[in-house]
Length: 359
Ligand code: GLY
Image (cartoon, rainbow, N blue to C red):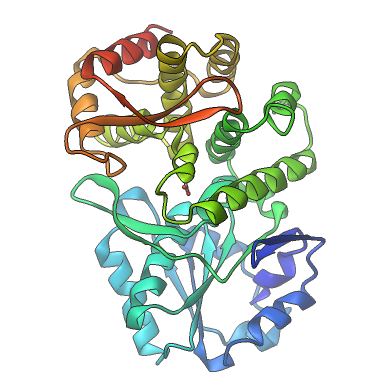
């Protein structure tokens, strides 16, 4: 399969990012695994990007093509991947290569983490969201009984191979969805590393290539945080900024008009920036700046006032909470100064949602 020929961006191995990744390096990586012990799992929508002729050595690696959506991020799909690996007699020395967006890498990573108590896997993210967030750091899992990522495991990939050229395959909405995670990372890091540059970045006119340094920066920031706190006991919670409200908004949208993760994260960031201002005295500028970006690129959330109480109930069930029924957020004191474990009341949540819905 020619997938590796596409990879001349950079890859992440043993906490290092290598730029100018050459296709030959894929051999170096794959040589660590018996050839007949490798399977690929990918997203059906990427079939047209897979070319089988250029690397005959890889052409006979079996590929499982999956229907990928939030609705299929389920145990049934994980079972399909397990069945595929059993059918190809993968042992514990086997390797699963996951090619796709964040849902696919979460599913594949979880299947690999649980198959025969865990085998190695490699991620090749095809979306911006997966490049800057989902494909590194080892969070894997599925949705369960309407709750996003409620079942899963921390299981880091052996490698993540990132080729920004995949971005050319992305529809605008998916691109914006990934950009939201870059915005989040910008807000929790020193402003000179990312946020200041993001404010100058014009998505309408800048060439895609100019995004590569920001992708690298995001991956490096995330990797540094994850190394310090792989199992999210403390510091890693900073990466959840915007996600307490964001996940609830994403979940509730499933029964209205489903929105993608990144759009929900932007709305969540607005609500949590609002609380950062009112509860921690964060300056108003980042809230105003993000509001401008939201209105220009993402539009308003399509929530209704009647969604308010269900949103609060969803936040009270968030898996990130330390105690049942509380609402736990990461907020910021200023750009680059995240504060984790901020418990907010339902009234605080209502006020932040009121603000968001009033924009
Ligand atoms: N998506 C946030 C994390 O990986 O911790």
